[in-house]
Each structure stands twice: as C-alpha cells, then as structure tokens.
Image (tube, rainbow, N blue to C red):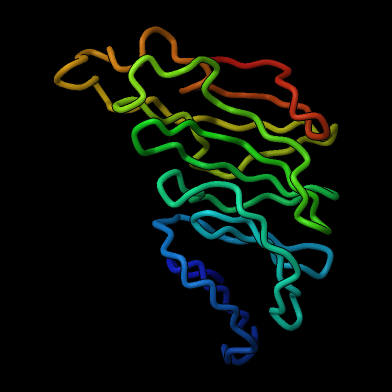
Length: 189
C-alpha cells in the first residue's frame, strides 16, 4: 500500500505485519496507488514514477516527470512492458501530460500533452490531466478521461471560461492513444 507521503509498505497477508517499507517522503495529495507485475511494484510520487522490487522494496528505478507544482496524483497502470501515468496540470499554467515508461528501466517511451494549444492566459488557466488510472484494451490502445480546464467559470479578469477560450482541446475528453506510439487515435469531448 501507499500513503499520502508516497511511501510504500508491504504487509504480510496472514498477519498484517510489515514485511518492508520504502520511504519516498514526497507529499502527494492522492488518490495515488500502486500497480504490481513481473515481480515489481510501480508507483508515483508527486514528481516521479518508480519501480521497487516486490520482495524486498529495493528501488529499481525512479524517473522524474514533472514538478511539484504540476503533480502526479493517480495510480500508474502496468500493461506488458509499459507503465502509464499522468500529471494533473492543476496549477496556473499547468498542462496535463500522459506518459508511457519502459517497465524494466523507467525510460520514457512517449508523452502526450493533453492541452493541444497554448493557454491564452497561462497565469490563470490550467488543467486537462488524468485524475483516474488509464485503461488498456487487448490491442494495447490506451483510454483515458481528462479533466476540465481551470479556473471553473473563469476568473475575475476573464469570466465565463475566458481564461481558456473555446473547447480547450483535449480537456473534458475521452482520449484513445496508441499504447506503443502515444499517437492520438481519436477523442470525444
């Protein structure tokens, strides 16, 4: 399990005793969470994705993807040789970004910016990231819902959504990407 400081704990199922703990000490508002497979546990801190050995908790790799101002708050998803995660883009100027990493090494395979065009007012507008884990189908296509743009209803200077004009693609959307390429296959906003 993972706490809101990104620390990971392995408990014995029969007794509940702590088997091992890996401290990251990175405050993450969550909901975060972990993925398991191939003898590894995959997770995120607020800024990085990581893999630890499932038996010992030894860190195998850590890949910095973002800053604490544009955090990762979701559980990663493991599918085959890839780990998928996303930032939320929640602070001013923030832009949600989807990532695919190599599960063995943490090497970045692709990234997809969920905000197609520049924000017209980047000191106000933000958003568009994934707040829930992605789904991967049998063909390896990645499905994810993206969040709304911020600030809701606009701002005093730019009311009624004026901080992000028009559709603000690809916020409030279902995105479908090629799992290997990261190429946008289709979307519905």
